[in-house]
Amino acid sequence: MKSDFEPISAELRRLFAAEREYSPAAVELRERALSRARESLRSAPRPPARVWDFRQARLLLVAAAMALAAAAFAKRGQLLQLVGTPSPSVPAAAGPSEASTPQTPPVQAAEQAAPDVSSAAPAVHTEKKESAPVARPAALTDPYQLELALLQRARAAVASERFPVALRAIAEHQRRFATGHLREEREALRVKALAGLGRVDEAHRAAEKFREHFPDSVLSPRIEGAVREAP
Amino acid sequence: MGSAHLASSLPSAVVTEERSCFAAFQREFDYLCRTLRRLGVRSEDLEDEVHEIFLVLNRKWGEYDPSRPLRPYLFGIAFRVVAARKRRRAHEQPGHFDDVADGAPRPDEALETALARATVLRALTRVPLARRAVLVMHDIDDVPMREIAEALSLPIFTGYSRLRKARREFEAAVQALQKRNREP
Image 1 (cartoon, helix red, strand yellow):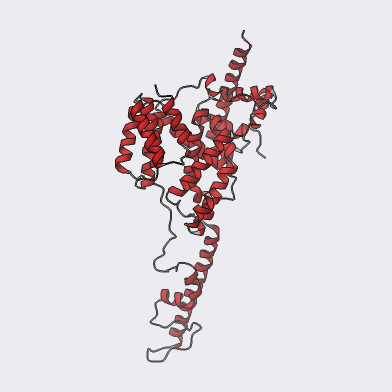
Image 2 (tube, chains in turn orange, cyan):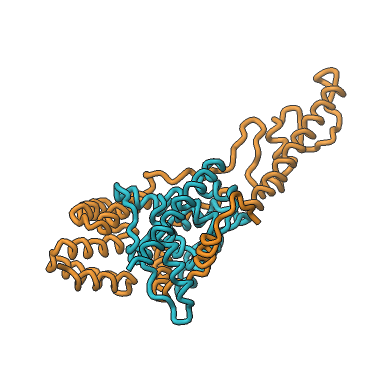
């Protein structure tokens, strides 16, 4: 339980307690939001793989430990052979590692000594360690990020009634991502922006096209509303 | 139809991840909507903003450590989504008390509780967003400051400083509201 760093007044305690008993969101809002979320999963690029999976990490650690042990073992075998063979012409004494020979590099010896490990996890090279792939932070080279950034701009402009700005962002999205993942959202915003500017005929045409292309869209009610309320 | 059809074309690991992300979103939906309202989002903007949260959550789901509590993580995403929206609008105006009408109280709801909640939402609009987030997490969601600092990427002392200021601002706003309500 968190400790109270400075106690608050009884009135604030009462208000906050009341606020904790908030009502659930409206059913229609929930249904629309979940439907949109499902649709996004269907159309969006796959999310990056989990960067840090604890089971994978344990497996990697075990694999690394075994590979190091095998490498150490092989080294020991080589040392024993060196100690046991004062001249190069004497054949190598039987060492504890069957897989290692004086000519076998330690890396290959480690891998040969631990075939199960290498098949289960990426091989750990003692000379050049390859780190596990790290997910790069999403940069604006990712097409989905670019699409999203453009449409966020358009949506913000619609929300603040800067409809010409919205149409410019929509046009840019159309030019760069004509068949992008978020074209449904783009066309919905187009209807709203046109309706907001009072370009009623164009808004109607855009709404009709929207219905044609996205007949089951969860955004349809809002578009119909925008067209109806156009100045 | 939705998730079964979706699942058929994806590798099983991805489907499991997406299902758990979607399930978490579904489970915490009411909390997310209420958090957005507390952070100043209007009712008519809720749907878009909560969808934005889902998009971010889905993208970042692989980074979430399931051994940590989920709500502070969700709050951090909600805060950043709302903050980004405010930055895009280029200016921040102090909220007007009438912007955050909470809708009619449910028939079975004590009027006093409904009025208290409306007061909280209105008073919160008078607290700047960065401080409001700390106040909401600490005093309403009951999250320890250490977790708040992590969710909002703050030093702990900054968190305490913001909480102190936010409480003063909130209390002043409540008093102003109550005074206004008493006036004829």
